Amino acid sequence: MSSTSTNKQPLLVDRPLFDSVRLTTQTVGSASTLFVQGGQAPSILVDMDAELTEDNNNGGVVDSISIIRDDATRAPDYTLTTASSGNAVYISSGQVVLISDITATGAATSGYGYYTYTGASAVTGLLGSLTYTVASGFTYEGVAYGQQDPVRVVFYHTRGTTTPIPASGDYQILFSKTVPANTQQVDCSDVMPEVAYPMPQAGDTSSLTNGVPLRNKGIYLEKGDRIYVGVVPDGPFPSGYTNGLHVSAQGGFF
Image 1: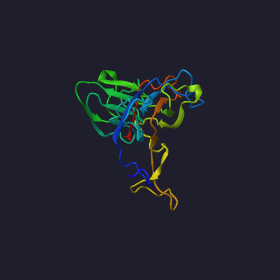
Image 2: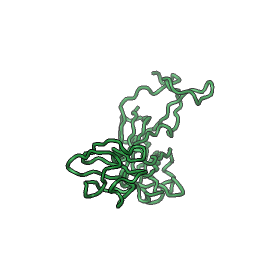
Image 3: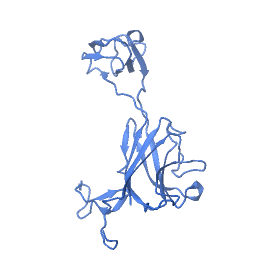
Image 4: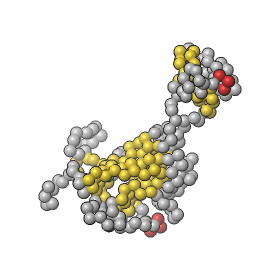
């Protein structure tokens, strides 16, 4: 495409871009601000040649960012409630049972909560009449088994530096994204900035007024730019999300 043409759309890139980083204790901000504080060091997610050493890097675009938790627990295979009482089950070793709003026979010592069956032989019977005890092969996992608290991640942009200084305002906030409670993976396309060109494909126009174009979302990066990412130390994670979050970015180089 000619350099003087208008309405250019970055449908083609010279090279694909895919970067990922694992976040644990890379905290950013505080309970009252999202700005990077002194002593904090967010992780580099995308580096668009901040050291200016590459001859074939003229910038690029990031059009997809996803976050996935490192920790995971299996959902209950059976849930015992007043509605499910009497249902036939086949419980094998490793399966999880949630006793919700009914008291099962033999469960008086533990009651409500999650149980993992660790016995060697499968158990068959009816929900409501099984014996959920350690002696019968069931391990009580507690009430909060599998609970994943919400965690907030913040993305920053830097330009013209390989050693950004928090107090100098080198870190500029791009956006933040919260991974909701009990959610394993999220996409950041809903909070990424809109880019200037209309979308070249059909999309949902239900929320747009007449004549408003659909637009892609993404981040244009000039040569020398970087995207950093970190975890906000609030809620139950004052020292970061030590279980680990994997953040991945896709796009392309120009």
